Image 1: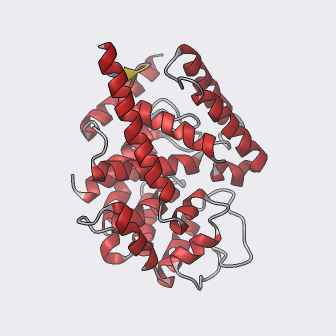
Image 2 (image 1 turned 180 degrees about the horizontal axis):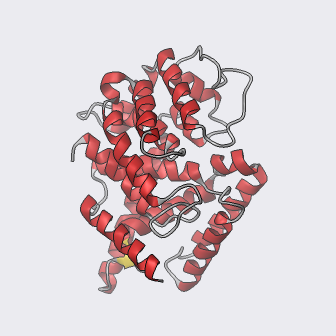
Image 3 (image 1 turned 90 degrees about the horizontal axis):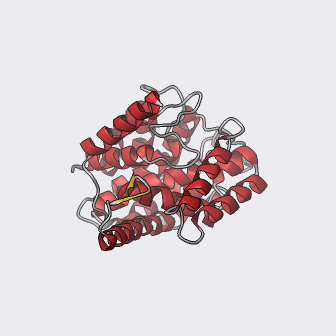
Length: 311
């Protein structure tokens, strides 16, 4: 795969997996559909693939502008902000070692472009801050302005920690795929988990674990810290014991999904989903997971949509 294809494929898999509280082929929001995500994935791939040439900030702005040309709402700002630095790492350099250099070389102009991208995307619940507010001209490099927001935003925190959580999540995805494949190969059963292909089951379980480990900052912005902590407690309940690879686990997963979708989808764990997309890009680029081909993922999504219409 080319870099452009890797970027689009990571976004496609993230959007296709039936993650609780998110849009996917069988679930939509009032103003957002699975088709919006696939169009956005295709739109941002080329602009982000140029990050190593035009800079992280300019690539992010170009990607958000490309998204706005095909989708009317904020589909992927967090994904764009995570993928732009990763895409800027030279192809002959491992992501884990190359990301630090990319981040330390960001400039004030990168901040200017990212601020413009954020204003264009208009994310909900953003608010204002006393220093380096997004509605003012920044005076610090992109890594430095992100560091100021690290304690309150999971996306910004990655810039301050050399994407530590993204790489840990990529490893968790890989470990889960290996575990599911090993378990089902021993039993001689089909390579799926309660009807989900292994790659999708790994994404869903890793996503739920992310929410369990730390309150989702998107929920915090929209609903407050106490409700985000409640989401973490509910996520932890889903993955206790054998996780959702059991009738009881599946029931708790569906109950969690229903709870997240209440209140007009304001409880959507968007930051955790964005981190999954970035982690999938790491796994795709470094080939740590036996992924299906993009055509098979698209066919799988289409079959889900058709089945959902017939139900």
